[in-house]
Amino acid sequence: MPIDGPAGRVEDELTAARAAVVEHAQRTARRQVAGRKLAAADEALAAARASLADEAADVARLESLSLARVWAGLRGDRAQRLDAERAEQQAAEYVAAAAQARRDAAEREVRAVDAGLAALGDVQARWRAALAAKEQWVRGVGGPAAADLAAVAEQVGAWRAQQTEVAEARAAAEHAAGALGAAADELRSADGWSTYDTFFDGGMVASMVKHDKLDRAAGLLREADAALRHLTVELGDLGEQGVGGVGVDGLTRTLDVWFDNIFTDWSVRNRIAEARDRVAAAGHAVDDVRQRLAERSAAVDAELAALAARRESLLVG
Image 1: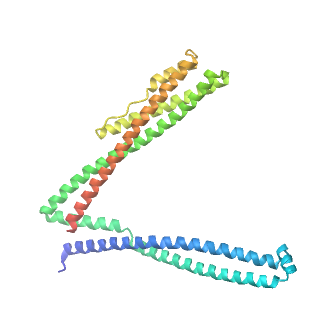
Image 2: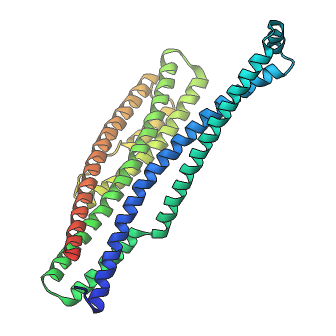
Image 3: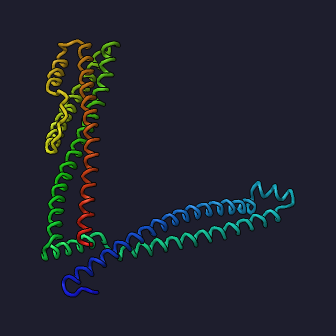
């Protein structure tokens, strides 16, 4: 029995919005099938055109003053061969025309489905709006369903806040991983030049390049340390322990000493090795954090999906 008044209008829109969602899903499936058919038709048309081009080339060679024509004339079968090649060309033209027709039909199907999808508009937005209207009406009426909806809304708010925090921490972890990777690459290069300078007497040029590499590494390590500190702050918001730094301050002072040539080349190599070890350890720690955050993000998404299903059940049911 139809419901009159505001409640009836809310229910009618909810029903229509749900029907639009279902129709959109059906048309989307049709679009995928039509897209695959169009792709296959494109491939078939390309193959048919290539075959036609080959047959046309064979006819052209016999019709022109070519070696093939001279040889066919000497053999006395030029006319027969030309007729055969023209027949093959005509057959290829027919195949290409048929392939073109199938391709055009597939393209029309794709356009028709796309037009239908466009006409439906943003069905998910319509569905969300219909659910929101129903929720507003239910809360206005009151009762157990309204209390359940309020509890669900409170939980959704808490999980969405955590979702934001997790996303910010994941972004910080990605940035830290990139910074550590750049520092590791520069330290690897510096290590190579240090080895050359230590064992092969690289001379002044090798020392200059090595010091330049070390200066760049120091800058990248400072950036990595800053990224790790930011990651620690973001993890703290989630109640998780942060990742330690790579000891940039001490390393920077050591680099300044190296540039003044107070330490030996061997000491420089040891310092670079220590820095690489610290960067590698920090990188492994950040990788562990990224894995944990990915798992936590998936868990939050699952909780929000369950709450959305619960809300929808309360409203639709």
